[in-house]
Length: 334
Image 1: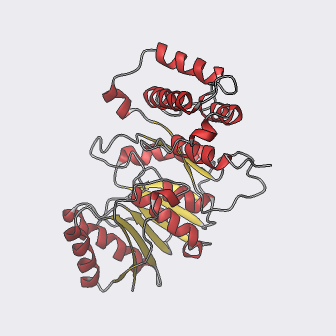
Image 2: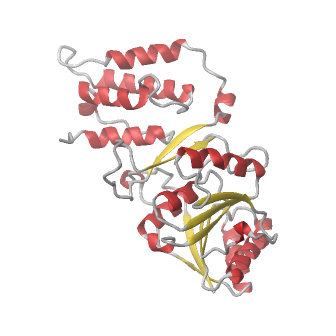
Image 3: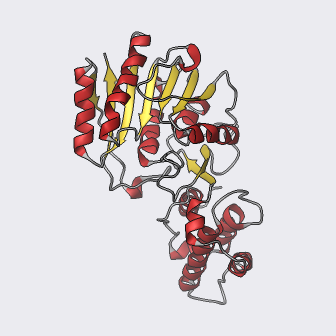
Protein backbone atom coordinates (compact mmCIF):
# COMPACT_ATOMS: atom_id res chain seq x y z
CA UNK A 1 0.00 0.00 0.00
CA UNK A 2 1.27 3.44 -0.94
CA UNK A 3 0.86 5.92 1.89
CA UNK A 4 -0.87 9.19 0.97
CA UNK A 5 2.12 11.16 2.31
CA UNK A 6 4.51 9.38 -0.04
CA UNK A 7 3.78 11.81 -2.90
CA UNK A 8 5.37 14.64 -0.87
CA UNK A 9 8.40 12.56 0.06
CA UNK A 10 8.82 11.39 -3.55
CA UNK A 11 8.72 14.97 -4.85
CA UNK A 12 11.30 16.16 -2.32
CA UNK A 13 13.60 13.22 -3.02
CA UNK A 14 13.38 13.65 -6.80
CA UNK A 15 14.28 17.33 -6.48
CA UNK A 16 17.18 16.57 -4.15
CA UNK A 17 18.63 13.93 -6.47
CA UNK A 18 18.41 16.45 -9.32
CA UNK A 19 20.38 18.86 -7.10
CA UNK A 20 17.73 21.54 -7.27
CA UNK A 21 18.41 24.71 -5.32
CA UNK A 22 14.65 25.05 -4.84
CA UNK A 23 13.31 22.15 -2.79
CA UNK A 24 9.70 21.48 -1.84
CA UNK A 25 10.03 20.08 1.67
CA UNK A 26 7.09 17.89 2.75
CA UNK A 27 4.42 19.63 4.87
CA UNK A 28 4.62 19.59 8.66
CA UNK A 29 2.10 16.77 9.09
CA UNK A 30 4.37 14.55 6.95
CA UNK A 31 7.74 15.69 8.32
CA UNK A 32 6.86 14.72 11.87
CA UNK A 33 6.05 11.11 10.88
CA UNK A 34 8.77 8.65 11.83
CA UNK A 35 8.13 6.53 8.73
CA UNK A 36 8.47 9.52 6.43
CA UNK A 37 11.75 10.51 8.09
CA UNK A 38 13.04 6.94 7.79
CA UNK A 39 12.17 6.89 4.08
CA UNK A 40 14.01 10.14 3.41
CA UNK A 41 17.05 8.90 5.34
CA UNK A 42 17.15 5.56 3.51
CA UNK A 43 16.87 7.21 0.10
CA UNK A 44 19.12 10.21 0.53
CA UNK A 45 21.37 10.16 3.59
CA UNK A 46 22.20 6.56 4.50
CA UNK A 47 25.88 5.63 4.19
CA UNK A 48 26.88 4.83 0.58
CA UNK A 49 23.32 5.11 -0.69
CA UNK A 50 24.34 7.78 -3.22
CA UNK A 51 27.88 7.00 -4.30
CA UNK A 52 29.25 9.96 -6.25
CA UNK A 53 26.06 11.84 -5.53
CA UNK A 54 25.38 15.37 -4.28
CA UNK A 55 28.36 17.44 -3.06
CA UNK A 56 28.86 17.50 0.71
CA UNK A 57 27.97 21.19 0.90
CA UNK A 58 24.63 20.54 -0.77
CA UNK A 59 23.96 17.51 1.43
CA UNK A 60 24.82 19.36 4.64
CA UNK A 61 22.78 22.45 3.74
CA UNK A 62 19.73 20.39 2.79
CA UNK A 63 19.88 18.06 5.80
CA UNK A 64 20.33 20.97 8.21
CA UNK A 65 17.24 22.68 6.78
CA UNK A 66 15.31 19.40 6.85
CA UNK A 67 16.07 18.79 10.54
CA UNK A 68 15.16 22.39 11.38
CA UNK A 69 11.81 21.97 9.63
CA UNK A 70 11.13 18.65 11.38
CA UNK A 71 11.81 20.23 14.77
CA UNK A 72 9.45 23.10 13.96
CA UNK A 73 6.77 20.66 12.78
CA UNK A 74 6.69 18.65 16.03
CA UNK A 75 3.91 19.76 18.35
CA UNK A 76 3.99 16.91 20.85
CA UNK A 77 7.51 15.66 21.65
CA UNK A 78 6.05 12.72 23.56
CA UNK A 79 4.46 11.49 20.32
CA UNK A 80 7.00 12.53 17.68
CA UNK A 81 10.75 13.06 17.45
CA UNK A 82 13.57 13.78 15.03
CA UNK A 83 15.03 10.60 13.56
CA UNK A 84 18.24 9.52 15.32
CA UNK A 85 19.56 8.44 11.92
CA UNK A 86 19.01 11.88 10.42
CA UNK A 87 20.63 13.56 13.42
CA UNK A 88 23.65 11.25 13.22
CA UNK A 89 24.02 11.90 9.50
CA UNK A 90 23.87 15.66 10.10
CA UNK A 91 26.49 15.46 12.85
CA UNK A 92 28.81 13.51 10.55
CA UNK A 93 28.43 16.01 7.71
CA UNK A 94 28.94 19.05 9.93
CA UNK A 95 31.99 17.54 11.60
CA UNK A 96 33.77 16.91 8.31
CA UNK A 97 35.68 19.76 6.60
CA UNK A 98 33.71 21.10 3.65
CA UNK A 99 35.39 22.25 0.43
CA UNK A 100 35.31 25.96 -0.45
CA UNK A 101 32.16 27.14 -2.21
CA UNK A 102 34.09 27.82 -5.42
CA UNK A 103 35.51 24.29 -5.48
CA UNK A 104 32.10 22.80 -4.72
CA UNK A 105 30.59 24.68 -7.68
CA UNK A 106 33.03 22.98 -10.06
CA UNK A 107 32.58 19.51 -8.59
CA UNK A 108 31.40 16.90 -11.05
CA UNK A 109 28.82 14.55 -9.56
CA UNK A 110 25.91 12.29 -10.36
CA UNK A 111 22.63 14.04 -11.07
CA UNK A 112 19.46 11.95 -11.35
CA UNK A 113 16.62 13.25 -13.50
CA UNK A 114 13.27 11.56 -12.85
CA UNK A 115 11.38 11.29 -16.16
CA UNK A 116 7.81 11.47 -14.90
CA UNK A 117 6.09 11.38 -18.30
CA UNK A 118 7.35 7.87 -18.99
CA UNK A 119 5.34 4.90 -17.68
CA UNK A 120 6.90 2.52 -15.18
CA UNK A 121 7.64 -0.93 -16.61
CA UNK A 122 7.55 -4.24 -14.72
CA UNK A 123 11.35 -4.43 -14.74
CA UNK A 124 11.61 -1.06 -12.99
CA UNK A 125 12.09 -1.94 -9.33
CA UNK A 126 13.72 1.17 -7.85
CA UNK A 127 11.41 3.78 -6.33
CA UNK A 128 12.77 6.61 -8.52
CA UNK A 129 12.59 4.96 -11.94
CA UNK A 130 12.45 5.86 -14.77
CA UNK A 131 15.53 8.04 -14.37
CA UNK A 132 18.44 9.39 -16.38
CA UNK A 133 21.66 9.64 -14.38
CA UNK A 134 24.36 11.98 -15.67
CA UNK A 135 27.75 13.22 -14.57
CA UNK A 136 27.37 17.00 -14.32
CA UNK A 137 28.75 20.16 -12.82
CA UNK A 138 25.28 21.63 -12.19
CA UNK A 139 26.52 24.88 -10.62
CA UNK A 140 28.98 25.56 -13.43
CA UNK A 141 27.77 27.80 -16.25
CA UNK A 142 30.81 27.33 -18.48
CA UNK A 143 34.36 26.03 -18.33
CA UNK A 144 37.13 25.35 -20.83
CA UNK A 145 35.14 27.19 -23.49
CA UNK A 146 32.06 24.97 -23.26
CA UNK A 147 28.62 25.16 -21.61
CA UNK A 148 28.07 21.42 -22.00
CA UNK A 149 28.98 20.29 -18.49
CA UNK A 150 25.47 20.64 -17.07
CA UNK A 151 21.98 19.83 -18.35
CA UNK A 152 20.12 22.98 -19.34
CA UNK A 153 16.38 23.64 -19.11
CA UNK A 154 15.90 23.48 -22.89
CA UNK A 155 17.18 19.88 -22.95
CA UNK A 156 14.81 18.83 -20.16
CA UNK A 157 11.93 20.57 -21.93
CA UNK A 158 12.70 18.93 -25.27
CA UNK A 159 12.87 15.60 -23.48
CA UNK A 160 9.39 16.10 -22.04
CA UNK A 161 8.07 16.94 -25.51
CA UNK A 162 9.63 13.80 -26.99
CA UNK A 163 8.13 11.67 -24.21
CA UNK A 164 4.68 12.84 -25.29
CA UNK A 165 5.50 12.55 -29.02
CA UNK A 166 7.82 9.56 -29.12
CA UNK A 167 6.86 8.80 -32.73
CA UNK A 168 9.31 11.55 -33.69
CA UNK A 169 12.26 9.27 -32.87
CA UNK A 170 10.76 5.78 -32.58
CA UNK A 171 12.71 3.38 -34.81
CA UNK A 172 14.70 6.23 -36.39
CA UNK A 173 18.31 7.28 -36.65
CA UNK A 174 18.86 10.43 -34.61
CA UNK A 175 21.55 13.11 -34.66
CA UNK A 176 21.76 15.37 -31.64
CA UNK A 177 23.64 18.64 -32.06
CA UNK A 178 25.33 20.16 -29.01
CA UNK A 179 24.60 17.06 -26.94
CA UNK A 180 26.31 18.39 -23.79
CA UNK A 181 25.69 15.95 -20.94
CA UNK A 182 23.77 13.65 -23.29
CA UNK A 183 20.34 13.91 -21.63
CA UNK A 184 18.33 13.94 -24.86
CA UNK A 185 20.44 11.26 -26.56
CA UNK A 186 20.24 8.93 -23.56
CA UNK A 187 16.47 9.46 -23.33
CA UNK A 188 16.03 8.56 -27.00
CA UNK A 189 18.08 5.37 -26.90
CA UNK A 190 17.12 4.11 -23.45
CA UNK A 191 13.42 4.90 -23.29
CA UNK A 192 12.07 6.08 -26.68
CA UNK A 193 13.23 3.14 -28.83
CA UNK A 194 15.12 5.02 -31.51
CA UNK A 195 17.24 2.92 -33.88
CA UNK A 196 20.50 4.76 -33.21
CA UNK A 197 21.72 8.09 -31.82
CA UNK A 198 24.80 10.10 -32.63
CA UNK A 199 25.41 12.40 -29.66
CA UNK A 200 27.56 15.13 -31.19
CA UNK A 201 29.25 18.16 -29.70
CA UNK A 202 31.93 20.60 -30.79
CA UNK A 203 33.94 20.25 -27.57
CA UNK A 204 36.51 17.47 -27.22
CA UNK A 205 36.06 17.61 -23.43
CA UNK A 206 32.30 17.19 -23.64
CA UNK A 207 32.51 14.31 -26.13
CA UNK A 208 35.09 12.58 -23.95
CA UNK A 209 32.93 12.86 -20.85
CA UNK A 210 29.80 11.55 -22.58
CA UNK A 211 31.16 8.03 -22.12
CA UNK A 212 30.56 8.31 -18.36
CA UNK A 213 26.90 9.17 -18.81
CA UNK A 214 26.36 6.40 -21.36
CA UNK A 215 27.87 3.88 -18.94
CA UNK A 216 25.76 5.09 -16.01
CA UNK A 217 22.60 4.55 -18.08
CA UNK A 218 23.68 1.19 -19.52
CA UNK A 219 23.47 2.46 -23.11
CA UNK A 220 27.13 2.19 -24.12
CA UNK A 221 26.39 -0.29 -26.94
CA UNK A 222 27.97 1.28 -30.05
CA UNK A 223 25.27 -0.27 -32.23
CA UNK A 224 22.73 1.97 -30.47
CA UNK A 225 24.61 5.15 -29.61
CA UNK A 226 27.91 6.86 -30.33
CA UNK A 227 29.52 10.10 -29.19
CA UNK A 228 31.29 12.12 -31.88
CA UNK A 229 32.82 15.53 -32.31
CA UNK A 230 31.01 17.70 -34.83
CA UNK A 231 31.84 21.32 -35.56
CA UNK A 232 28.87 23.14 -37.03
CA UNK A 233 29.36 24.22 -40.60
CA UNK A 234 31.98 21.55 -41.31
CA UNK A 235 31.26 18.57 -43.52
CA UNK A 236 31.29 15.30 -41.59
CA UNK A 237 30.22 11.74 -42.26
CA UNK A 238 28.77 11.46 -38.71
CA UNK A 239 29.03 7.72 -38.35
CA UNK A 240 28.67 7.32 -42.10
CA UNK A 241 24.87 6.94 -42.00
CA UNK A 242 22.48 9.86 -42.52
CA UNK A 243 20.09 10.78 -39.73
CA UNK A 244 16.32 10.78 -40.07
CA UNK A 245 15.79 13.23 -37.20
CA UNK A 246 17.99 16.07 -35.94
CA UNK A 247 17.61 17.28 -32.36
CA UNK A 248 19.19 20.21 -30.56
CA UNK A 249 18.68 21.85 -27.18
CA UNK A 250 20.01 25.25 -26.16
CA UNK A 251 22.05 25.51 -29.34
CA UNK A 252 20.73 28.97 -30.32
CA UNK A 253 22.62 31.18 -27.89
CA UNK A 254 25.21 32.98 -30.00
CA UNK A 255 24.19 35.15 -32.94
CA UNK A 256 27.54 34.53 -34.61
CA UNK A 257 27.03 30.75 -34.50
CA UNK A 258 23.59 30.78 -36.14
CA UNK A 259 24.80 30.50 -39.80
CA UNK A 260 26.99 27.49 -39.03
CA UNK A 261 24.19 25.83 -37.04
CA UNK A 262 21.74 26.26 -39.90
CA UNK A 263 24.37 25.02 -42.37
CA UNK A 264 24.66 21.82 -40.35
CA UNK A 265 20.89 21.31 -40.22
CA UNK A 266 20.66 21.85 -43.98
CA UNK A 267 23.54 19.42 -44.54
CA UNK A 268 21.62 16.75 -42.60
CA UNK A 269 18.46 17.44 -44.58
CA UNK A 270 20.28 17.21 -47.90
CA UNK A 271 21.88 13.90 -46.89
CA UNK A 272 18.49 12.20 -46.66
CA UNK A 273 15.01 13.12 -47.87
CA UNK A 274 12.31 13.82 -45.31
CA UNK A 275 14.57 14.76 -42.39
CA UNK A 276 12.94 16.79 -39.65
CA UNK A 277 14.68 18.80 -36.95
CA UNK A 278 13.42 19.77 -33.49
CA UNK A 279 15.33 22.57 -31.83
CA UNK A 280 14.60 23.63 -28.24
CA UNK A 281 15.80 27.09 -27.25
CA UNK A 282 15.66 29.16 -24.10
CA UNK A 283 14.73 32.70 -25.06
CA UNK A 284 17.53 34.84 -23.68
CA UNK A 285 17.60 37.19 -26.64
CA UNK A 286 14.66 37.31 -29.04
CA UNK A 287 16.89 38.81 -31.73
CA UNK A 288 18.99 35.65 -31.82
CA UNK A 289 15.94 33.39 -32.13
CA UNK A 290 14.52 35.57 -34.91
CA UNK A 291 17.87 35.45 -36.70
CA UNK A 292 17.80 31.65 -36.51
CA UNK A 293 14.31 31.45 -38.04
CA UNK A 294 15.28 33.96 -40.76
CA UNK A 295 18.41 31.96 -41.57
CA UNK A 296 16.29 28.81 -41.91
CA UNK A 297 13.90 30.54 -44.31
CA UNK A 298 16.82 31.82 -46.39
CA UNK A 299 17.95 28.21 -46.85
CA UNK A 300 14.43 27.05 -47.82
CA UNK A 301 13.88 25.38 -44.48
CA UNK A 302 10.39 25.75 -43.06
CA UNK A 303 10.17 26.56 -39.37
CA UNK A 304 7.21 26.48 -37.03
CA UNK A 305 7.01 26.90 -33.28
CA UNK A 306 5.22 24.04 -31.55
CA UNK A 307 2.77 24.74 -28.75
CA UNK A 308 4.42 23.27 -25.66
CA UNK A 309 4.68 25.72 -22.74
CA UNK A 310 6.73 25.05 -19.63
CA UNK A 311 4.57 23.60 -16.87
CA UNK A 312 4.17 25.65 -13.69
CA UNK A 313 6.53 24.45 -10.97
CA UNK A 314 3.71 23.04 -8.82
CA UNK A 315 2.59 20.80 -11.70
CA UNK A 316 6.05 19.43 -12.50
CA UNK A 317 6.81 15.90 -11.34
CA UNK A 318 10.29 15.57 -12.79
CA UNK A 319 12.55 16.56 -14.25
CA UNK A 320 12.26 19.93 -12.53
CA UNK A 321 13.26 23.18 -14.19
CA UNK A 322 12.58 26.90 -13.93
CA UNK A 323 9.01 27.75 -14.91
CA UNK A 324 9.86 31.44 -15.34
CA UNK A 325 12.05 30.94 -18.40
CA UNK A 326 10.60 31.02 -21.90
CA UNK A 327 11.56 27.94 -23.90
CA UNK A 328 10.60 27.60 -27.54
CA UNK A 329 10.63 24.41 -29.60
CA UNK A 330 10.93 24.75 -33.37
CA UNK A 331 10.05 22.06 -35.89
CA UNK A 332 12.09 22.38 -39.09
CA UNK A 333 11.53 20.61 -42.39
CA UNK A 334 11.77 21.01 -46.15
